[in-house]
Length: 310
Ligand code: A3P
Image (cartoon, rainbow, N blue to C red; front, side, top):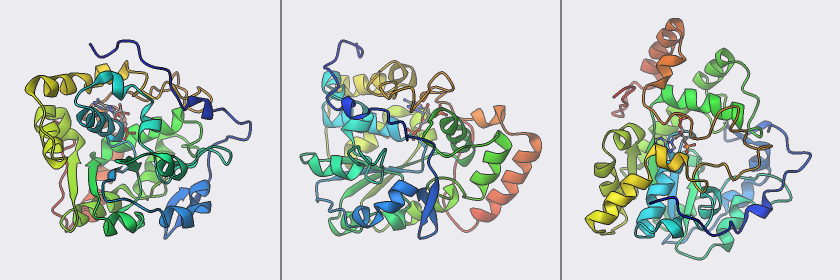
């Protein structure tokens, strides 16, 4: 029911591969590692003019952003799967801080071209979100995922996305992630910063593990936050179409429309496992002990808690 023929992708021609596209280097903005291309356009990103009816989907990378985007898009289009296949996730929701290549439209360009109401995406830490989002009192949905599964997913994403920084070995990447020396910085600071912000702004804070456990309950929260009401059969359709197995087969949601020179799904698919607790297949006993004791320190003093398994 979800995979009938779709209209041609309007914007994919833009995604030409350029010979100078290589794994990105990292720079820093206010101590947070961001790609050098993001750093170079930072002034424009910071000056971005949000509008009051913009919806921002925010997350630390690999926390279920694409999943949340699909849920939101289906809600906004009353469960109309054809309309949700009008373009890839990447083109439906401009990624405000992203610059793929100097000759290609940036996330900001795409956002500026888009008619309202706009749904936008970011992985920025809360303190780096352009101030106009707060001034305009925009609604924001933040999705968080437990640190261990996020780390595993991020590692495999670095392997398959050939524009991400070189991950090194699993052991190397493990150390860099714990130290916050990865793109978008420290997972710990990210989730804590947004957790504090949710009490001061219109932020719906979701957890990957909760959506996995009970998608109906969590999708209802999104519906309420977006002030939408849908018939039960539409809700059932959204639950069905946003399941891992269905999204994995949806070319408009699984990133297979990206050139393989950018994302090589034969190394590791973007829709990899979609599970809670996969970290157990990656962490050594020593890594787990080290991680847990460091985690305890970094997460001390916050009321924010995560489930590492279901
Ligand atoms: P894994 O690598 O653990 O499989 P993001 O969109 O933030 O980059 O997150 C990607 C992660 O979310 C990947 O995790 C991907 O498989 C998972 N994901 C995407 N859609 C999902 C869905 N419908 N259900 C569960 N997990 C999903």
